[in-house]
Amino acid sequence: MFKHTSIEDLYALFLEAGQKICTDTRKITEGAIFFALKGPNFNANQLAAQALAAGCSYAVIDEEAFVSNHKTILVADVLTALQQLAAFHRQQFKFPVLAITGSNAKTTHKELINAVLSKKYAVLFTRGNLNNHIGVPLTLLSITKQHNFAIIEMGANHVGEIATLCDIAQPDYGLITNIGKAHLEGFGGIEGVKKGKSELYKFLNSGNGTAFINGDDPTLVELARNIKTITYGEKEHNSFRAVNTSGEGKVSFSYRSNKGEGEHVVKTQMVGTYNFINCVAAACVGSYFGVPDQDIVAALQNYLPDMNRSQLVTTEKNELILDAYNANPNSMKAAIENFVYYPAQKKMLLLGDMFELGDYSAAEHTAIVDLLKDKKMDEALLIGKEFTKAAGAEFRTFGTTKECSDYLQRMAPTGYTILIKGSRGMKMEVLQDVL
Image (cartoon, rainbow, N blue to C red; front, side, top):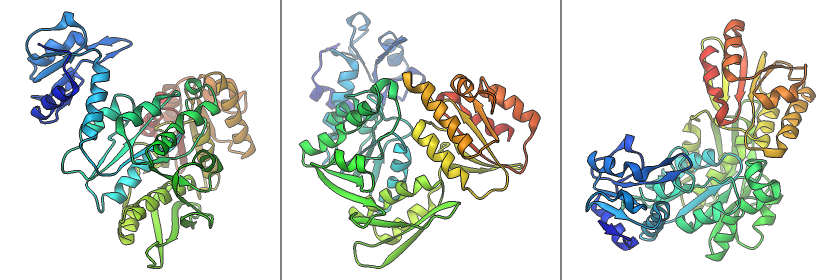
């Protein structure tokens, strides 16, 4: 048994194991180190022996009662050990690390920026939704000598979380996508969101780091007034300026090269004018890090949205705008306002409840219902307890996504363009099966 092993010793074992980490006994990799994490409803210390029997090289635990043999590593706290190991590993590399957080479009920014930077760099980037206190360490621990750039997505639902993730990842560069009404329950209101997200700026300021900022967003500009910035946006004062040429369909824009090579036109495959600034951010970051303009243009034009984020899906009967990965009041409002002008003869909206709004939930759902009325979006089906309470008699409502699916199967809409959006827990994407 290794008792209270130092991080340096644990790191040596990590390298010996070929940098293989495992936290789930259902997904064992031969020779990996198993970290016995705890949660509200589980204690993986109880599975340490099972992980070793299944082929793990070592098991890191924090309860001495579960020591089984010499391959057991006892630490004070498994999660802390994982985070410290990740921080130590990150410190071995000197290439740029870019952290991305914000209320909306974190993953979209990450994917677009990765697409652009990958034209020049070997990029390590956050996979899936590994953006929390466990996911960020796991991402960092997958850095290898083959990488020369890292993009780390950081999610948070309470004050202090971004600060913790920054201490682990030690980013040199940062980007906050926006400040909006997300996770209001955990943050305690919009001021809490500002405080929590701006922890990234505070970290950058402490280490002379640089922030990429939407220079047209006064909230972000104000929060970043004391740090080094690279600004992007439509207005002339931005260091990277783009012109939005989007019509009513897909996003397009033009920008002038910082290298004096004239104007470049980008025609993307992304729907939603709210994606304009996301694409510009990626172009700005790419330009700053020396990606050739022709490669920036190609990366953005070839990028295809997936994972239920602004994803255009054509079925045998309808055209779907599948934006069902998640939702909060800001992203819901933006999606609806964009859909009003989307070029289609027959439109329908399928909107699901927005979660984690706490005491603000009733008011925010009512505001969305009022927006639908104001925009005369009559063919809207609203799903979930909160929307059902807010909708009154003016819209058709359903308690669950399954109830709506059954209705759509009977209705069999054909020839529609349909916006599908709701919080992750609503599983709105299942509706595409009957459309």
